[in-house]
Picture 1: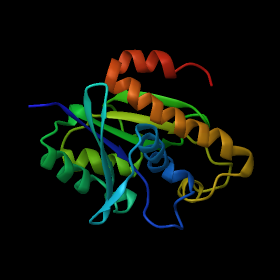
Picture 2: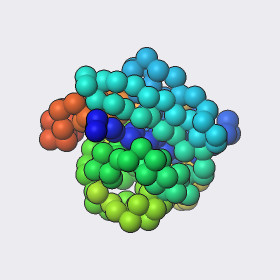
Picture 3: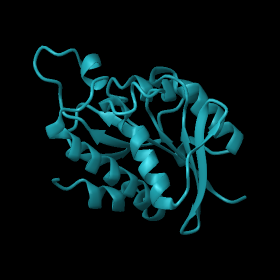
Picture 4: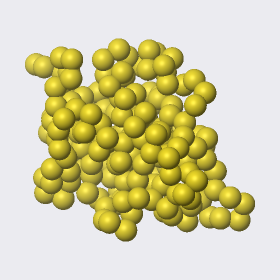
Length: 190
């Protein structure tokens, strides 16, 4: 059977959240779709697309659920495709990384990211790839929840947009050449 990758962009549904920091993963998935020449289309409450990339079958998926309960739709999609967690890549925002940085890892802690925690719980497994998009820490006195659900400051917009494009490229390197090559390429200073 041909190998499949499931590539998931996390975000909250609706126009009110589309440009927030917390939707960086969903925007990165949209960049990836564009890069692959496909369009994310509505399938039920979710968005999805398929593409071939250098011999790899890629399924792009954006859950239509709220970020904090995105795990069950991801688990159902994995099961439907017959994909193991080791062929899952989740793109998401990360406040613990500097603004504009991109980091890749396999497994490990969710770092308090409730969308990633939801995926881990639904799968009963944390051994999936994560492409983390740095937001930077909130200013002193600002609740982290309010920070991620707010729009980036105009001075941050380009750095975040560039990180989202970089994250899309990092996924392609990961699926083609593996984690070590992708980390070596994308973990340098930005």
